[in-house]
Length: 316
Image (cartoon, rainbow, N blue to C red; front, side):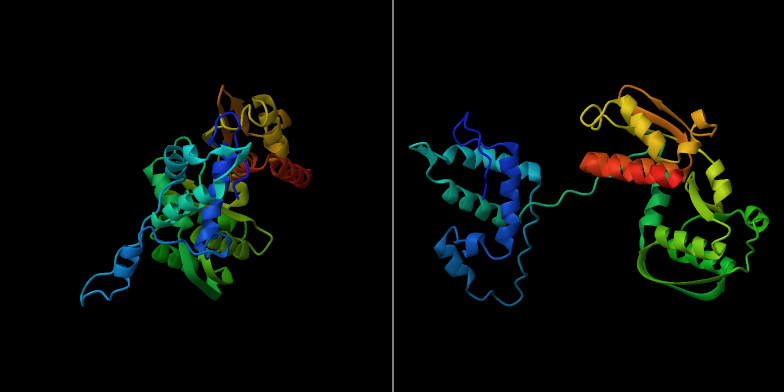
């Protein structure tokens, strides 16, 4: 049920109420609201639809659905003002709700919004293409004692990615091209598979890692990758000051992400704050942790703080 109501204006619900109404649509898709099937808008049309279609008639395409913003506009424009008050109570809320849900169902429901990804400053089409290749799912990866060089060649073939291996750094760390790799994985993103393959090839003694440089996936030792820094800008205007001010955000990141990596502790990483952006120079792994923390802050600040505390504890 829609439970939030703005008493200042009859028939106008709060934003929370509108979101709740959209959640009601999901219930309607599983068999109708409160166990009732939605009645057809026009019984004559319903009877007509039961007649068999002529041979060769293509099936009608399903409705594509509308966005959440369009659903909210539909409620405000068409349904909100239809609620009326009798003796201080909303007399027809359920009826209006049901008609609203029925129309949303007829439109195909509310389309889920795509997941929001943090945009990295400086990311061009080459970096975006490489990241897309890393995100691509692989149905199966199965190696049993295969040489690392053969594994890398396989990954190049199946992903179409430009992969460069710094064999000099790997051999200096004690990892040769003949290093056996044994990994068996299914339905996994290429990037995650690559991480596990490199972990297996390092044997737990020589950390291996990769980074993206102008569209090329570079593989080297973790020590060498950590020494490679890149600069990214993070737009945090939706975090500051909604959750904390800029100074507190900078301090949280420095405490949660590799505390010894920052300049005040002798490390090579740096972070600068402008009015709405953080300019960060650090390695790929630290950038990933920063993105994770900002994502948690946008969803659940308490979870972000807990995550930061755990990361700080690991870094000590």
